[in-house]
Amino acid sequence: MNEHYDGFAVYRKYLAYKLHFTTDKYDYTEHSGMIHTKLETFTKRNDRYMFHKLSVKYNQDEIDDFMIANFLKKNKAWSGSLLEKESHEIYLQYKRRTDSSSYFFKEDCSRILTTCDMDGIMPTDVVIVRDGQHPILLRHCIGNKISTETLIIMDYHLNFIKDWQEKITDKIVWPNFYKKITKFKPFLKFNQTETKLILREVFL
Image 1: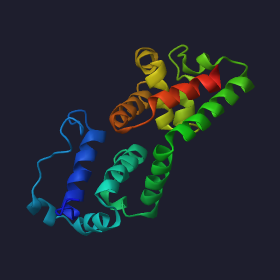
Image 2 (image 1 turned 90 degrees about the horizontal axis):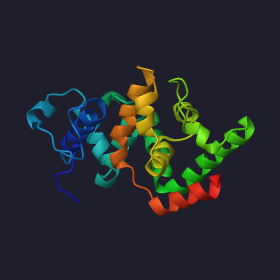
Image 3 (image 1 turned 180 degrees about the vertical axis):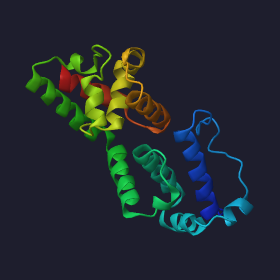
Image 4 (image 1 turned 90 degrees about the vertical axis):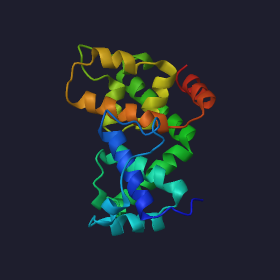
């Protein structure tokens, strides 16, 4: 454990993740989370106490997941909201999904299969872009019927997002969503073999 983990360290994490999720020029993984900021700048911030409280509430092993979860959910994640109960709930829900990713992936796949059965369509139809419109799977994810993690795992095995990027004509919702999943993808860890077997078990 780093003895220098404190409010300033959390502030640096916050800035790094904010740059990663909200800009095109910074990649957290490429820069190993390193950014240029001064302690003097931090001590002049009115919200510095909030970062100190976060360093007490979440240890070093937790703060990364906390930041990722909140930027994934709220995009810009205003610093003043990070101590709110909602932010903690977002973190807990994220941890539940990622700690049991295969279980939640299977649940989402079963949900997708139910949609296919009800609508009388093939599972492959849910990823097809028709007339430039959002495919069924994307609508499910935007509507919170399946998780972002599930969408990324399915794309890992089936490679359809590249096709979406070429064919979806929407210039507002899709570009923002595409940026979000692209930024989140490097942080998502899952069992590739197990999720591949789940896909076969549910859909074949």
